[in-house]
Image (cartoon, rainbow, N blue to C red; front, side, top):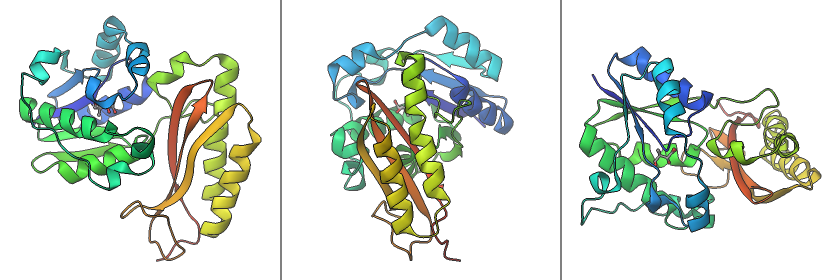
Length: 253
Ligand code: PAF
């Protein structure tokens, strides 16, 4: 049994939780570290993406990785490759703001699966839409998900957080505060209102989207949706942050 943990490096406790979960499944845990240009629509974002290979090796090994693999661009994309399409769900929310982002994610994940041939692969719930789309394309690989790891203030851990100052981190915690408050509401309507109101309170946060979706198909949730989830994305000082949480909102049993 081989478990793959695909990452773009700049590892943190969130990645370590994925690696630890992988290690519970198998003693053969490969962590791939590849900053995939295909999933960056913005050249500056790609250039500024944090990189710390030496520390990554240490953190991955400490968490239980048996191999840390840094493929080269040519290994992943040796000429003509099959580009995957994320379809209509891939163009919603995160995909609306970042056209072709999910096509790039699915293409690289598919290539990593082809090369490593893992039995399992572990991904974080923080990138919830990504997780959903990967589950759809994974035919021979079992996808295991791990809950989001948060800092003391509730901020979802992300490699991009390294670019936030201390005050910016404080301001960014409005995202998890708003999602938590919305998750306790009794209806979709009140959850949406709470989410909107709280996100608007933090002037340093520029909202991209804040929606309550039906987990089944990412449509806007109705009261009848079995499983509802709040998705939020936006920017603090130009740095993009995303998060999500399950919503209670009058759970239908
Ligand atoms: O979540 C990430 O870090 C990336 O999108 C992934 C899955 C490693 C693909 O490049």
